[in-house]
Image (cartoon, rainbow, N blue to C red; front, side, top):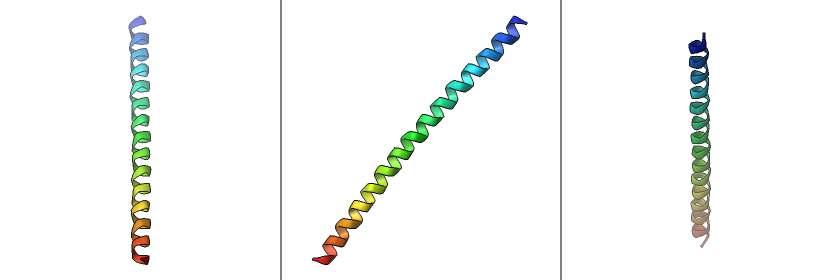
Length: 53
């Protein structure tokens, strides 16, 4: 009985660890995508200003 409880506890702990790591990667990807979008918008604005002159 003790082994079953220990195994279930180990499985629960490992699932929590993998879930939290996965969420951090999504956050990092979201930040990177936002930075890329801002960079693209700045380049587009610079092109528009260049076209005006």
